[in-house]
Length: 507
Image (cartoon, rainbow, N blue to C red; front, side, top):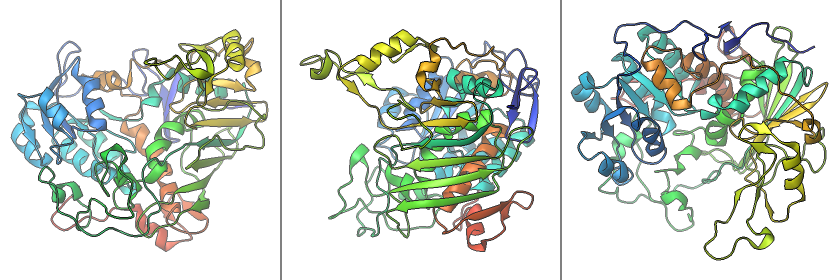
């Protein structure tokens, strides 16, 4: 029988558990510490990063709070937000911003390349600033533990930017598993079409001049110095305005990012992490990969994590697939079943809606908001003009059934979907989120901890980052959780900590 909670609860990784306060989604009472703000008082928020994803993160906070300072090493990338907040101070170096504007800053958004997350977040927390840090939180396991310890030491409110943790579907998955609806889960399969940036390259183009709008040395930060290059002949990848490294392609490099796993696992594996109370695995292995490179992650891969028994929950295998152009073939899954993200339906059928019409709209795939409607699902299956989405999602395989979710833990449903015809979701045992940004803002003002605060996010990211290491080291890696290292591969252990360039310090 599946392990069932007997009261409202949440957990921090696999180590901590407690009651969920009625006011929010966490496991400790409301924070009351020096600097507490009333819910009606606006926060003064600074952002390290202003272009790209940072643009969205700032928008998520600006409506209710004050944006008081912006920092970005790339003025061109940040141009839109710099113009929008014309009167706020602008900086290239986050350290200068914190020194000069610190007294006027309550909280900081950190949305920059992965290799600088921990450095910036530590500098902020040491000054008593609350932090919202984009996924995957850090590039290495040691940095994740460092941020978790600092958040508790300085009593600041934290949140990782894996917004799926705030979704209704993620909570539904946990409640379905805990209610025993699919029995004991022995396998989870999770997949993505990422990378959509270059990976598996084997040559670095010749150096080119650094653009006047970019401070390349600050962009490198703690990473080893190297010449800048925009790319060149034989390097055609220019999607998202990307040059060889920046502003987007850095995700594929060992020194800067965590590949497709780091980009999407914090979303897609969020529901499994919550529902199955995952802590440290006993082993991790890259079981296949294509496009090996001396300095980049492969073009595509399959990774296996093995987790031990957790309470009454039996051992479970997690399989991760990236670089896909269709959902994976999973032996246990019914043939022809829609798994993960649901498709869309073109307006007007196969021909679309004509000139000027939107190319697609969300299909009536069976969901009205978070409510599943089986009749609408049947209509969608019979509709012409189906357009399949990018393949992202997960599948839970239990001894009594299966369930699937989309990219961010949404569109949760049993498999085969015909089982949803008369299905009723279990009673809610987890409180619901007011929204990922508002969850953090509430915590900054003394409310309950955010749903992906660092006591939750750091353990989650840590086991995921073991998979990132497995992409760089051949063979099955045995993990010793007590010692915090691999027991059978010394070479793999070197990747548990970051290399910090001379002149820089994380703390």
